[in-house]
Image (tube, rainbow, N blue to C red):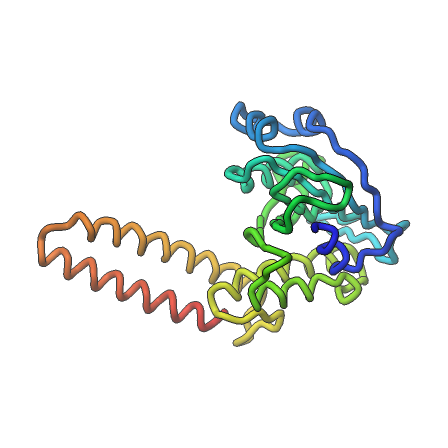
Length: 262
């Protein structure tokens, strides 16, 4: 079923690689903790370098400035045996490979190169830039992920997101613009989960960075709200209960106000 995702992306055949990537690559190119090594060993079934986007495979030019270089973009597919540490695995992979990645996580073991036993997947992206502390090192930052999506039964917002993954509609001026288009779509989906509709057009004169900041504000406020609700359940003093309920109402109002700006 994962083949349906790549069909929606309309990736030219010239970009297809279909090459196996071995786990030892990450042991050799990343500083892994014992927990990281366990996650790779126990959670990851296979890793495939499905597509490579570079000037020789697609008519897009390299990009370089004083902060970053985007000479190519790779699409990796990680087939997982279990999913509890998917965010950590995403960080490991993004930090081990120096060029920008579109990572497609699938939940089931493959039975052929392009098909899986079910249709669930998660996309993960991260920007890359030069390290300011270590010469020639590359830093991954701005991690974004979609959460698990079901190709066979998407929500209305998820369906709109999937339709927007046609790469022929993305900028082809250079690879930074190309990758930024992918990132914008993942961010727009995250916003849609809060504001109720998927749109690449940003309201209220906001920038994409503004959107990301507001998403983080919502996440922080939701965490604070959850913590206060936990305290409220245990609180016996009526006066303190009133104070906690008042704070919950204030946070809820603030969350709703931010959502309306997304």
